[in-house]
Amino acid sequence: MRTLTRGAIWLTFLGYCALIVQLVVLKEMDAQSAVTNIFERQRPSEWTTNNFTLFETIRLYWSDSRIPWTVRLSNLAGNVLGFLPFGILFPLLFRRKPSLLLTLFFGFLFSLGLELAQWFMAVGSFDVDDLLLNTIGVLIGYTAFRIVHALVPIRTYLYPKSSNHSTH
Image 1 (cartoon, rainbow, N blue to C red):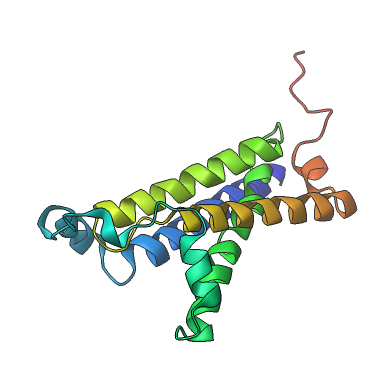
Image 2 (cartoon, rainbow, N blue to C red; image 1 turned 90 degrees about the horizontal axis):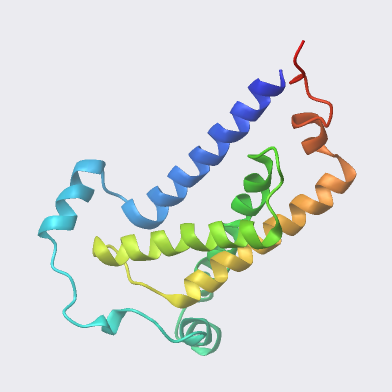
């Protein structure tokens, strides 16, 4: 039963990652269109649509009243909320629980991969503020995982200390 549960957690995590890739990178295109897009779509000649200045996009969404509040909320909160599941699920995947730093590192790498894919496939722009907000989402998710795990120790169920790995 534990193996089945661990398998379900892996499938949930992989499904979550696929969903994020679909929503962020592939948006409304199928796999064939995505591949075609890499080779045929014009990329910007300059990096003017990208943001390499920390807090630039956040400041814009926070202070520019011309941007509808729904757009602000979906961009800022969406980047955080979209990465909460990463911080919750990632620590459940491995027998040895990853530390906060390791979880943040892999969450950051996943986010970085998405940002680079958006630029490379010319379906979006690279934004360091998205990296920051996504990583904050991983942090909040990991914190939620630790709080829930303190109340309901699911890892104890998934990975009991006295495992049946003894030799006879």
